[in-house]
Image (tube, rainbow, N blue to C red; front, side, top):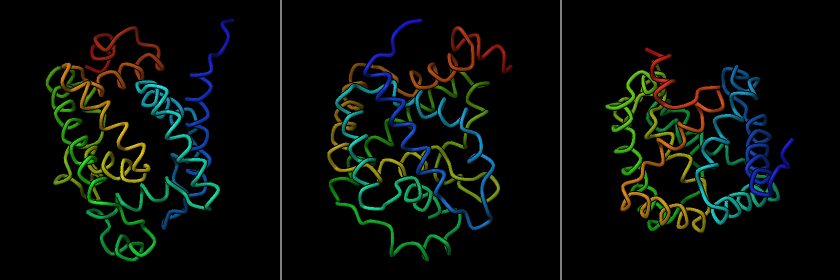
Length: 208
């Protein structure tokens, strides 16, 4: 059995910190079924964080630790922000407790969101069977029937990160974009490996 690296331990620790916060999110309609599915949660979250370099991982883990020390729940904040277009009355009720963010942070987040949207459109074009299993794509598709889109989810999550973490992520995404790399593809490749597929092509064929 191979030894678990420090990086792998950090990625797991981040997912574990997020899972603990997720367990303390109280939904209006009661506990959500996904809050009992730790296997899927860890696969999804670790697939995402595996893409990023140690500097970003360390910065975000610090965000998680600082949130816990302050008695704040980053996952609650994310889902509260996601309510803006889907459950507007609930969002407005929670608005006084949602932290304000700087214009600079909003600008960096929006640039990252737009890059991810282009990556997502590429996935839809090249791996439609995999993509159809995900969220609807854009914020204008948000609804109570369909839920929040990938765009709204990403924006809401990124706004919970510290400005330090956002700046690091923004630089990393921009560098990947300029090199023609698709970070979303890398994330989904990680997900498919967790589920036993050898490649995106194998997963695409299985979902046809």
